[in-house]
Amino acid sequence: MPFPFQALYLPLAMVIALVAWWRARSLGGAFLRWSGVLVLAALAVELWALMLRWRWGHNTWLYNVFTPIEFLLMLRLAACHLPQHRIALLVSAAVGLAGMALAFVRASSTDILLVEGVVLMAVIITGWSLAALWNIAQRVDRPLAASPSFWFFLGVLLYFCGIVPFVSMLYLLDHDDPQLTNALYWIVIVLAILRYLLAAFAFGMARRQRQWDEHGRRA
Image 1 (tube, one colour):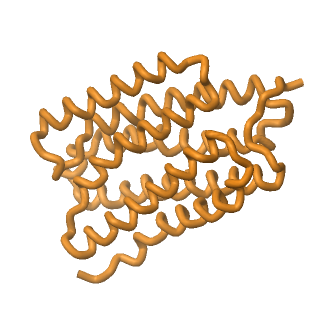
Image 2 (tube, one colour):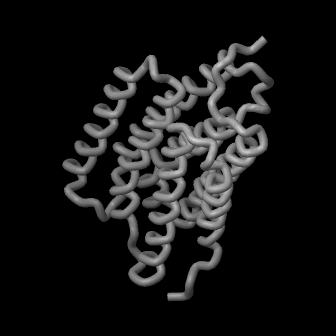
């Protein structure tokens, strides 16, 4: 099977984000620490998935395994900005994991995408991303466009909100029109690329400003 070089676009965006994070990591703080873990884990999974696809043509199980990990990491990042909502975040984590477990029981396999669990987790992350963005808008003491956290969570929001309709219709689309499914899948890839490029932009902005956390209220 020929190597799918076009599939390297997303890992390249992740590498850019990881390099930007590495240059900003000395700023410290829980958010930078956990966001670095997230980007590194996502890059490792994407490269592993690429090799599985190239050699064996099947990598869905890997995404099923990584989705709950990414979900928990995203909730941890939300908690950095919303510490007052830790109980609600814990409940959200339990609901998301329970949904993924039920999707696995229903499918009895990880070889097909656990659509219900993936969609539920994406919806939960979308909600908490909106909450984080609202919190940032209320607390930062400078324009939103100058806030690294704003750009980071904007990328997260665009990605997870964008994948919900596609993943929800995945089985129906794949059954009725596989070619359309493949074409629409590139929308997901583009959203993922945008997400990590915005993360890289956020890390670069934080490095230039020599800070990440915003605590003051906007004037």
